[in-house]
Image (cartoon, rainbow, N blue to C red):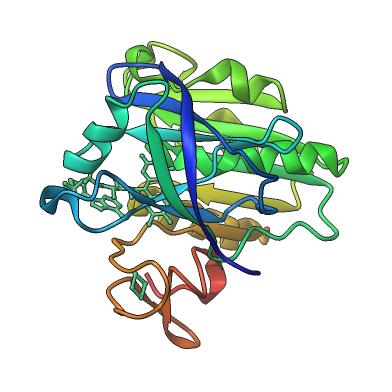
Length: 256
Ligand SMILES: Cc1cc2nc3c(=O)[nH]c(=O)nc-3n(C[C@H](O)[C@H](O)[C@H](O)COP(=O)(O)OP(=O)(O)OC[C@H]3O[C@@H](n4cnc5c(N)ncnc54)[C@H](O)[C@@H]3O)c2cc1C
Ligand code: FES
């Protein structure tokens, strides 16, 4: 798929909790086709402080209105600048990058996300629903103050929540949820994105339950297009670049 380098205009910056923001970007021209799981490399402001582009997943897309949404967790200098962006500001992106989730032959899917790893799962849930596949979201957060934009997920499927302190949903991690304990019957695919420790546990769960599983990895990236090798992941096929051969891998290929 041909990559574009394009300027977007920020038309909305919505804070969803103390760390997370949803940026809505407007394009002047028809958008390139995006697939769930793909990402963009964002040029922050070109300053020496944040010289390298930052990889960010597609959270949502609206082809008719030519808008793309990104979910941003403020963790450092680059994401802080994104969190502070104002309507009217310009943002340059290289997109679409990486591979995507697959869903051929899937009937009922469980989408397990934690923290900012919920980002690619929103667009995936929308795409699954549009393809008559029933998505259930299982999302884990620290506590009620860190929930991320739940109404957007509820538009596309059933949403189950866990929090570390039990302040919303069931107490514990996503792996402690009763849907997991009850055996995951009926699900023929699991998708996961989030902290590595969580994805690893989800991969083990999928293996135990014999359910096919894909994970979207968020290895640290520099170039984002396959040249620097800083994002490599050990797999059964050798070392692969998460920015080109990923970020989505079948979990039975990953050597964690
Ligand atoms: C394929 C992919 C998709 C991503 N999608 C999203 C998304 O949708 N929304 C979002 O907010 N973030 C996403 N990330 C993570 C995001 O790229 C990093 O948080 C961001 O680059 C940090 O930049 P910074 O300048 O704010 O932080 P820095 O100042 O560079 O670093 C601050 C802290 O963040 C950590 N960090 C840096 N890069 C990464 C990384 N790639 N992954 C995890 N931690 C990192 C550093 O170790 C450090 O502790 C994604 C990463 C990848 C690889
Ligand atoms: S980020 Fe440079 S090869 Fe992947």
